[in-house]
Image 1 (cartoon, rainbow, N blue to C red):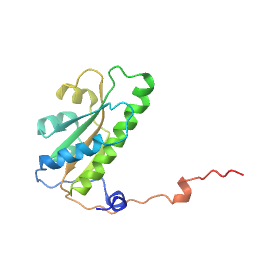
Image 2: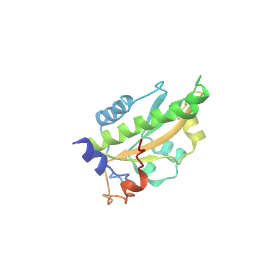
Image 3: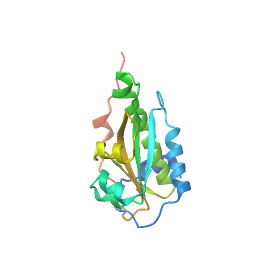
Amino acid sequence: MELQEAIRNRRSIRRYRNTPVEDDKIRRVIEAGLWAPYANERWRFAVVRNEMTKRAISSQRHILQAPVDIVVFADLKGASKGDAELYAIQETAAAIQNMLLTAHEEGLSTCWNGSFDDKAICELLKAPEGYKPVAVISIGYPGEKPDPPERRPFDQVVHFETIE
């Protein structure tokens, strides 16, 4: 799959087939995240497959229905203010984007979720002190194929500064 094709064809999926996801595919997805640009490598990942754990961390149907959820944490222990407020979040976001594109290349679908119970995630997954959940990525084989979303025209969102 070509990169531009993957970027333009990847979709957030909220319905998954009841088909297990192979461990080697999950490993490749996470490894792709580790190749993202970073400031301090503060990302940490937890793979969740247990239905009871899923129910405790979120009521979103697609998190519950997905065969696998990956919780992405930022390890903020000992982080400076700038690192905790900006760099750790940026590097986890870069890792997540790599993971979404790799999952798509593997024939999987994903949804980047930001609505979840932070405290429940940390307690249930026994996250060390200083871990901040940033996202829950639901992953599975797609049970739907949504149309591409509308995008604002290039000229409405991009401005080129001109130097005279």
